[in-house]
Image (cartoon, rainbow over all chains, first blue to last red):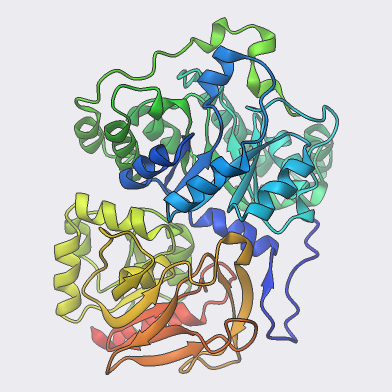
Length: 306
Length: 201
């Protein structure tokens, strides 16, 4: 694996941007909820509710769906205003393959970059070379092969894609179960079959072998795309997610502050039905949502990226 | 040698890595999310994570008072990064409603080294830990700006723009580091804490 930036133990000089430092940042977010916000006010509501980070973007995925058009990086002014408003980490999205948007976002001092299929891809062949950056990246994946290709390119965190902006959790479950099942399958393979598995996954053999041995990705795995209720978040945690991204689910609901706090509590107590029942009460209407099965091919965001 | 039971506050953060490091140090490690679980442990680790989130959940799930009480009764606690903030008597650059446990008499500045792009990996020499410097991670890390009487400074940053900053302290049975020893596979700090818990049994 490309890991050229590890520190030299013969010197005491601090080293930034190492794989350890980038992946370690995601370790600190585990068990937490990262919320999409489009204004400084929403960012404050998210922080008050106990979010571990916020994702700054122009439009939440459900509005991107409704309004159509090309979706791009947010205005730096808007990202700055969110960084000024909260003390928790701030993430921002860039288009798949748009390394200049990533350079700009890094220069703003954003804590994590999401190379995201929710925005319109800028390159249909290549993703960003994420090793070239000091800022860490999170990328989406629908299956293990896709996750491993992103990690090979330098992603320091993976989120299962789900289907953003639908409020329909079914694709999130499919992707999380799929990734976990493929990991378990690798664990069961004899060494000689791992070579073929690597070929089939279109991923480097060394990485495939590491996963067969450890039974987990070498980076943190979150879930995303369609989580709208505390029960959705808890189910994804029980399925093996290490944390949750909630996009449209919070600020497209009746009572965002209340729902945001409930999803935070549900993520921590994901295996405790009594607590889940308590936090699920009186939340008002969830986002209306779209049944992901009715989406046409061109509206399926999860199929962007490969 | 007895194996102490050490809890890891499991509200949010890198609970698994601390649990694994404690197990490697010969302790029985278990997650703590409820007051009843706190009663079963001899010592507690407050992991890295988001201190604002951990503080809020500690209040919501009625852990604040029992943890304060156990600390007053002498339970050993180790806080790493967010855990250091949770153990500080005073926090700068935190949220106004953010409260730590009744812990170490010190002033800690949150995110003192800067945002994530300034996070770094560096060796830190720590008093009381033999075998050379610990190679550790500082992630949006705090530092200690002031320590009160009776607080022992165990480690400082040796090089770079933040040289001289205090990043490891101990007051009685309370231990805090601005950095993460649990992410680089160096088990010496957890062994040091497990010894501290054993001695307090």
